[in-house]
Image 1 (cartoon, one colour):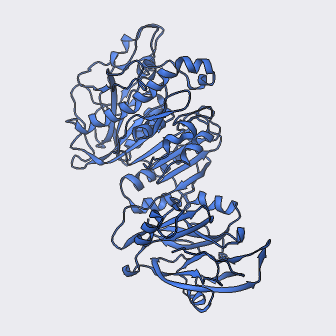
Image 2 (image 1 turned 90 degrees about the horizontal axis):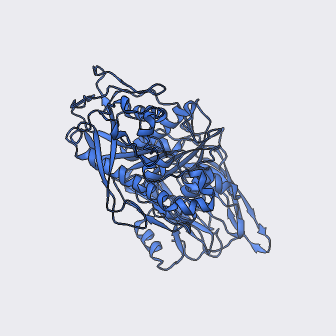
Image 3 (image 1 turned 135 degrees about the vertical axis):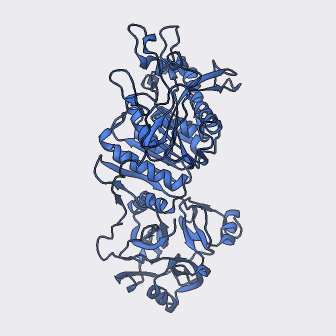
Length: 595
């Protein structure tokens, strides 16, 4: 354990001549200011560029399945002069006259409509508490390639609903014996599943084998609010209660849509309730975060409250996700309503987006726990960027496979990705992939930080971690949330990592873990280091690259800043970059960890 941290008059460096051949240079008597500094820099210089072979990936090929959809047949003759069908799809009222898609449905009995029960919570639901709100659904699913049903054309300027059921027709499945994963799709403010960009997106997702359920939110039924208008304080004060209600009804609708799908006679035996993900665009991104338990801003004073806590969502992707504005964050003051949020989240934001500004998104994503990714699209505003579609869907589908389908290869891939070839200019901003559930012989190596010492420490020992968590013997150590997996020494997988700590009174003030045999032998031979045992097993990188299915672990050295040596072991690109920007030396990839 990191007990009794001591300083020493030594700094050491090593360079790598081959993957396991190191040269050491010991620099004695190094002083930093008036303090005697102990620094041991285990600086590894890569043979070449040391680039990760899986950092940039090719876009996924088109989905392998044809797509069929549920019945949304409409009588467009009911649309009055001066109106459009979109007014009904989006729930835009005509003065005091309500308009909603259910009014156009030819066969509402065979269409999918769920009644959303609004709870008796007057803080969130100023007008509709205790009421039932009818919400129409569109469900699209992988269908047989020879499905004979025609596409259903939508009005001029729109797309078509592929292989749509009519009347009481039931779904034609690509494979009736398979239970397909489920995707909850939430569109943006004043949109609908039939809008041009949304119908394209949800059918693309269905073509990869997801049963997609998409509510017609009909936002204007609850609030006549435009997000940009909230910059006007008076307008916000007058309209904010209904704006809160509209936002709060949305996650109730997505949760109710999921309940409806999982219990529906046509779908319940063909879907996998253990593999459920969400894809939300704009306000739909906020909606799915709220469904999974985030707290919604409920007052102009920025207090927040949880609407629902649906643990069924295993992963969420938000495209240009709405996290609010700088003056009105979506999840409470400073986005604190996200502090306990652990559902894996991938945000895909636009650097040129002023409606859902990326600064608010960054503030929110930094508060998330567990797996989180945020990438930015250069030149993209608040719209669906079709040139970036390969990037959007490749990132999303690999993320879903990693976190909802327990695909360990995909999990390692998403941890290593920084970009998709071609398409738009996608740039990774924030990333961390948490370790998956432990398999036989695996452990989690946990990183701690002590603010009073400004030191980091890793352990794979459960008893040691429990002691640190409890503050026994050495108080003040807090988990950072940047952990990685290893194997037990007994597993025989990989190479054992030697664990050393500076000899009290003479050695450097840091722990070092290494699977490099030459490095371990040199530490053994140096009296300034105390051998504490074999900590865990890891596989070795070759030229700083790891094989498919493994996650690179990078070692960093603080360069003796503050007069105390320290090391970190990280898998997150963004945390590595931030640590290096703070003056730490990047020593290179030292382990290849299981995902």
